[in-house]
Amino acid sequence: MSIGNTLDRDAGSSPNGPPIDQPTGTTFRDKVGFAMGLRHSSFRWLGSLLVVLLALGCEAGSRSPAEPPAPWNVLLISVDTLRPDHLSAYGYPRPTSPHLDAWIARRGQLFETAVTASPWTLPAHLSLFTGLRALTHGVNHTQPVPDNLTLLAEHFQRAGYQTAAFTGGGFLHPEFAFEQGFEQFEAWNGRRKAAEEIVSGVDGVVQLIQEQARETRPFFLFLHTYETHEPYRPRQPFFGQFSSLPSNLEVRLRQNPMTPETGREITKTPVLLDPERGIAGSIPSELEEITVDLYDSGIASMDHQLSRIWQALETTGRDDDTIVVFTSDHGELLGEHGVGGHSYYWDENLLIPLVIAVPGQPPTRHHRPWARLIDVAPTLLELCAIESTEQMDGRSLAPWLLGTAGATPTDEAWAYSSKPNSWLALRRPGMRYVLSTDPFLPRPRRSLFYDLRGDHPPTLSDATEPPPGLREVAAAQLDRWPPSHRLVIANREDRDLHFRIGGSAAPPVRVKNPHLDTPVLRYEGPTTLGTVPRQQTLEVYLEATTGSSLELSVWFSDQRTEPTRVAWVLTPEAFAGMALQAAEWTHLASLPAPGATHVLLSPHGEGARSTATELPTELRSQLEALGYVD
Image: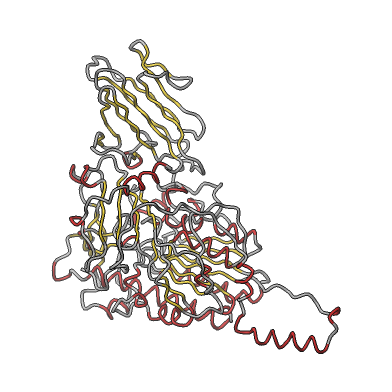
């Protein structure tokens, strides 16, 4: 049970059908120079007076050329797993974030509707750092960031900024290559008490802000924390302020068994943990509020620590020359819809807080445009007049932040999840559409349309068929699949062809197909089995990393001999395949002849590709402690 307002803040709007906006690149308009000129707008009168005095006292030919304004500093804060509807500034009745609220009231521009690009940490933060949708950058599994993707810190470093990051580790660890562009990158290693993680990160940010007086370069600082992430622990004294329930208990999320009715969809349920006795069990009715109370205490603890940053900015005078962005990577379900955690398509996961403070600009609440996590990177680059040739799916919010907006607001957001649940979601005013890419999911749950104009958030049973054309719009997005591999099995025989795929390239979680209306695949442990009926073709995508291996077995329904088995290593350039010739499978040196029964594995999509890597034991343990499973 949750306290707070309904998450849908666009009730009353009409659902819109196709067409949709196409992704746009990062643009730097003439107003960038205008924006930089507004930096010290409160001192314009002083500048005008100075010009008059110079004109009176000096000849025109003796004037010095005007110096450009000094670059702004940037502080980017990401609080992992933070729901906007549990912040006071977004209407939550509990005082969970008084310090943040006060800072917003002084300086912040709050976007009432902001949507993530993916509901889990790694792909969402890469979207934050690149301005790319999760489908575009393709890093949607436990894999490192490809080094040919340019991250936000690299742009600032090239522009002469001092760059530093303090993260909670986990998926924001150097093993995942998020340190690109940072001169200093400190990731929490999980060896000490979890309560010390946010303290350590804030200490680092405050120290650098205070030392900035001795630094000639502007800074780009990034702070990330898991303070509001599972496991939910009582943060004192805040838990005692919100709850009268026992303070010696924790809540973890337990994975529910998968069933034929749910395909390979993974759900989790909050369970109660007694740390002293190590006992976990269902939450009794008399303690049903404890999940929310514990989560809120984590928010209050985060707010208390961030107050030290607001104070450091104010006392050092950095408030006047620092852009601050406060956001999250995704939200969290706290028992709503019968589940907990994230990776779902519900608004409790997709909606995030977004507050941006620009020096010299008054605090504001923006009902429009909708903001998206992918908009942060192009916004910061434009505000700081840093040019980029990188293509981005996001668009700059600078016109709205500077009060110069003339562009059409964006009221559309895409989000993609590849694991543990696989789907693509489109959100527009008054509606949400979800198209599953999980080939194991039953047909009724593959295409879900929700009308959000009611008084209450919709449930799974409220899903209806989408308006005409909407499914095709979503499927077209998926046809531009991220860098992956396509596996085609074409059966031209008058008998059924069976197959099994496995290996590091093809565990069931990496097997995708948005076009299967009925399940033709089934999973069995770490492998996928299926049947291609006579005279039909099956196509699936493998979200696999370079260097991983595919193990394939094929056999016909009337075959009396052992299945034919092959193993291929995936590369970003070459294809592999085999064709049936004279009742024998032979390896292909070129594309198969028309009409031949064949299996073909080929690279699909353009862009960066990750290479398979083995995680250190310590990092894997930290990810497990955070509730992540592969």
